Length: 388
Ligand code: UDP
Image (tube, rainbow, N blue to C red; front, top):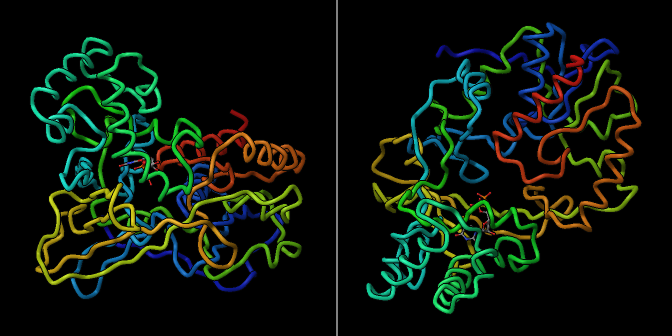
């Protein structure tokens, strides 16, 4: 697809009470801006704190190696929605990539989500055969069981297996990633990587999966290159909030910041991401390898595998999770539990009282959204303003 130009602006000349202001130029903001510009034919100004578009989906081409690097960790697009897939496909060709992950447990690389092949790799053959039979008998072939559910079985052998997977795959990884045990998180968090009683070694089963052919940033550039859209980078909306006029405001930042923390802080996990180039053509078998037990990082991503980039070097990403601290790092993962949900609900009730202001995206909704869900959220907001 052809290269296009975004209308970057650095002053407030185009901001007035007949424009739509979008705060945040990540996926949620880009989609809502694109829909308003193309389908409503109305002007949009996007204000972004960072010096680049794309939020945490941002990728760039490393100048030394030519490899596309996911700056904020691995992003693999997948959806079951034809609408979402066709929408993005207007702005990108796809590299038909299917994600596979290995986890190193007891020094052995096994498929993650843990499946029947993982079972046979990790345990002696007679034990693995017996457990496979019991798993299939109890749950059926090709079924998925969240680890916290598997741990509830009464069978002695299945209990042994559940404890083994819990200890080796989930417990230490989750302690590193979230600072708490799996059972202290919303069950959907570890439930998204269930034990798989089958041989499908893909990380995701969605119908459509892929990586934008020339990267996420290139796709976003095409979504933003529209005469109705202006983008202001390095612009902190909250610092100028009282002077900004708008017809509608779409806020994709943290909802608690918008309301000046009046109901308290909402906690998040963040990541320290280390990106390093190694002088070897290939480092690991699959793009992402998880290290539940060893090291302080959770996983290593080999960026060149996403788009099959050719180089005699490789660029690796190491993710070191940590708590979010204002001014020190980024909000990346909302920490879902009933206490935090109750705080969020207070903000949401407040948000509903303000006309023409909408909160969306992972931070606006305080949800552990993946890219598909984020896009669906922006579609929902768009339909809301259209009165659908
Ligand atoms: N998880 C784990 N071990 C793994 C993979 C995942 O314990 O090898 C748990 C962990 O709590 C993680 C969650 O499952 O945060 C969701 O994993 P996913 O790979 O979807 O996380 P993301 O890519 O969003 O960081």
